[in-house]
Image 1 (cartoon, rainbow, N blue to C red):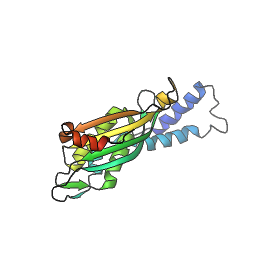
Image 2 (cartoon, helix red, strand yellow):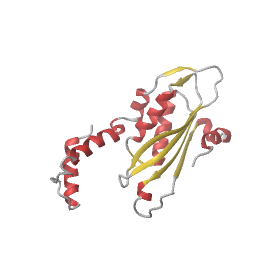
Image 3 (tube, rainbow, N blue to C red):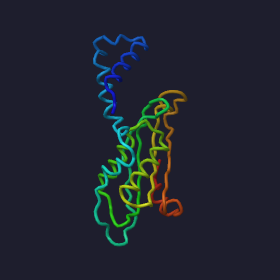
Image 4 (cartoon, one colour):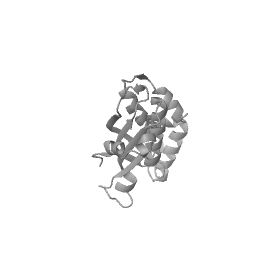
Length: 189
């Protein structure tokens, strides 16, 4: 579990290290606010991929001979594990081929959201979502494409604001079938 008291103490120390007065009016409540925010935005740290798959595995009988289920533009944000910088304006496209069952649509979005609530690399986020979705949907055939901006590139360092990172993770039939991959990657920017 996330130790909010320790976060409060450390944020207070960071404020002092920055030359700020942690006791001034505008900052006096900041350590507690940051601790509460971290509890929310890093909730996914509390769960394994398997536990997330179990949490969001509500499924329904699939129709006969279903085609791929594709959900586009699921919005998430995360924090880069290298700088703890925000990864934002992230759009996740996911697809899977049902194997007798289909997931509730909101469950797929919840999987993406919970996997993003960790210190992450965008590449790992795609792999985590694919692994979780594969288990929750009971299918080996999954594709995940993520496009996002990283404040470690846009707000600091090189400050290349228009730069977007696109990552792809393909499992099962998606690794070999260009048509399946193209359905998922079409229009990604």
